[in-house]
Image 1 (cartoon, one colour):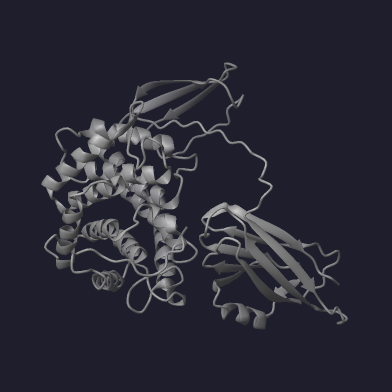
Image 2 (cartoon, rainbow, N blue to C red):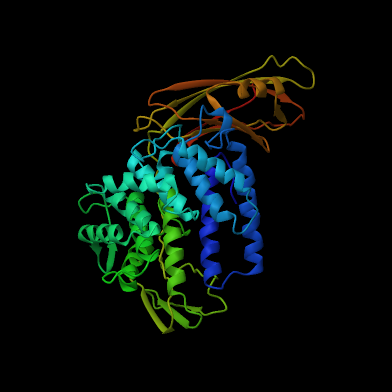
Length: 478
């Protein structure tokens, strides 16, 4: 279900479309799944319109930001285009985003970046105007725009010029997908052949990385997924048939976590798009497989995958949790088997955020009284700057936030958004620099008398790296 600001909402919005594409192309889309997915898509679409600027662009907080962001606007345009096959999307919103992007196209055909993106990892490896152009042109082509369109035509000129120097593997993978969509088989063959010379092997798996054999996590998943998209989005290339794609999928499957995602938001979206296309290409309406798992203590676990339950996710806790397990299969078909081991570690002594709280009150009123909560947060983490920062203030039981205090928070330029939800006040900050401190004051009004009042907590964390956080209790002084 999509929710949150203009960035967070899109990260949840997009996967629904690729899952629907796979289920639809394989004939597995049921009325119940379609109804639920439509609800998610409609919610995501309506929510995203809250972050639209009058010029048709989009940013994390809409009009609270000075301008729309180039990459995010292209992303919204692309996802709206995919969603309109399933739910109503006003074509005007797509056209306005397209026209706004057109104003940012430079004389050489490349697009320039404007605006603020609070979650920089969201755009993956799109780090300069050339990779941004490859992304935007691919989005235009996915929308059905022709290569004769002036924006697409000029964008391809920019990309052809940049493709004379292929020293960036991420750009090579992304632009290979772009020229595949453009139907330029000569450029596609050149780029895919170049990528084949850069391929790394992990057993039978194939993958691509920006470094010398050292995995860099989400970026490797993303660029490997773009290679897979380049291979599957056009006519089959002689030396790169489906068996070649299967080795890429083998590597991607090993990177997928137990919840179906990957290591970040954007690599999950691109990988799902590529895996959906591969799954549709290899789908078979027949087959049944029995999977037998034997533990080190000879305990057996049996799983049956057939046409009636192929969409059912099956899992079992295995005992003992460690040791050598044996997997045996019989039947005909393709199944995905994954082992997942979870464990806990002691937290670090040094917290990324520290919080100081101070609660004061006159305590003079006989029945109801007010509490003034002042808190200061400081970022002590290893990075020079955080992503978006969330402050979650749990209100004391029986207290509400004073309306004047809420108005003051909403007018604070440091705060991008204020939300209230079931006794919590959420403050969204655009980020903090290392060793920076910020202080805030909230006025809490008691409206219900609660005996034996317990302390409440102020929590702060990096929205896109929740392990970076801290918390501090406060209590009523009365």
